[in-house]
Length: 97
Length: 488
Image (cartoon, rainbow over all chains, first blue to last red; front, side, top):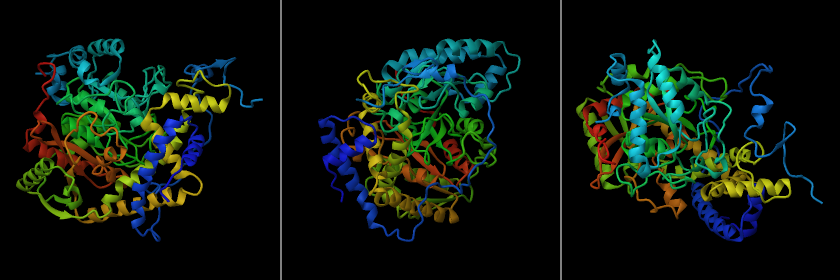
């Protein structure tokens, strides 16, 4: 089960929106395989009747009124953007021909 | 002798008596930084002009009552500071010069009028245990610059140890405050999960991350945590629990204190010098009227695997926000949106960050979620239950902070699993969400500091501080200074 293929690594890289070179695929296949192999030790434990912990504290949904308030201006929102035009973020086209 | 050999309380007295000015304190910082930071590399960004202007303003102010008035502080570079560059030591944020707001901890500190000297180096996005994952020049250990300062808050610990600032803030996801504090011979506290607001802390693993202070003394540490702790409506996971006055807990009285010492924390793999220092510390506690017994945290050995699955999974989701659209660096090589995302991220992120995003994405992906992510969450429950059980009978858990003193630069960087194993004694504390502190408790034969870890119950930082303080007052390890760049 711990075996992870190069194809899987490429698929995961796509899901993670990372571009990887063949060399990186090679290295990541090795590294992820080793880490996942190591994580297999968790299967020594019987956790059939154990509840998963998502949060250590008793958490309830925190509700608040949905009220509009001033936070940042449009100009501020754009000031760290790598590319902008007419008061908006500019990005390359999504659809390619 | 440096001004920073004094406690906050002592410096406060000197300011009141007009023996020193805030400008003296700020100049002490920048002078020391110029002397030693070429070797230590603790700082990524300095805020000299602002700091000097603020110091002058404070020196002209009639009201000096704020609890951190004029104290020079350093901030880990994953805590957002309005208008002051915040990079997370990543090339992706190299150009992030103008953050729009202050993290809640920065706002809370600002009410008490300290002076921010600059932003501190770290492992990129807080992923690492040695600072070698900084995409800038990695920080070195002030006690011996051939060695790492620890990580990920390596800059925060090294800057305090080297006398560049009086105190700093770090963040701790699996040991990132306590481990560098141990390696650099300073005091580092990871508060209870939910104690300190995470609003404005660039998220790594949201169910584990906590901000905490790094200082030279327990008293200073308690004083800074008093300021930054408390409920925040901007962080839905921050706990609505009253914050006691931690400095009132420093009574120097540990008579009758019940200490648990997990046998797993002194097992094989823990360096003999570290073990000896911890045993000596237990003798000190006995002489002060506390008692200790050996206990077991049987699931400790599963903590590292559990942690890497959970923290990487959370990181893979949290780091999805770095898309090259709203801030950060965008690739110049992309004709379409998807390639823009992919190339910006691949060019901006370092190797370890990519590795963890990949691991997390894999663990969360269809077909593997139950086998890895959910399994790890279940084991997390077992690890948390271990602590709950111990704390039914004992006041604190004590052990080493790290299995070894600071290792050498380059020693572990090529093998992720060896590097990860270094956090075996700190990770369980984050998984259980309890508070833990590291304080100096000895030196190796090579002269490198050794850290003692004191772990407490949820929201019982007071007992952790009381326990740490009593040991500190009975010993002189915290008064030792690294020999660096001449005098300190």
